[in-house]
Image 1: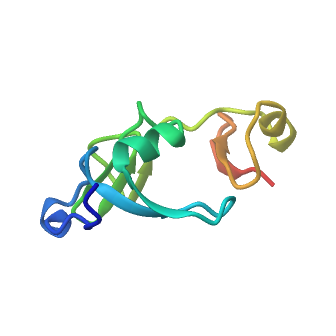
Image 2: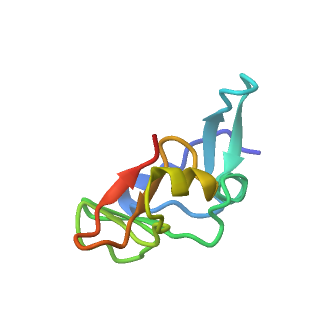
Length: 106
């Protein structure tokens, strides 16, 4: 496997599934090169979209409308429900209330 970061990334503005990234695993202490496809599979993000559109970043959308546009956050009534639903500290969720705030599991 080539150990080069994609040199045309700045001009492309998006990662290909075959691009290689240097990843450090804080649990094992191992640093190794992996493809974007392998990383997404390990993070269970295979069916999600992460794109960069100019100065806008989209997660779950290919056409972000703001600087950070996240689509598809899970809905939980409160922090306890989010934890019971399997979210970990630091995860985002929404309440589907009015207004509909974005919350962080703590």
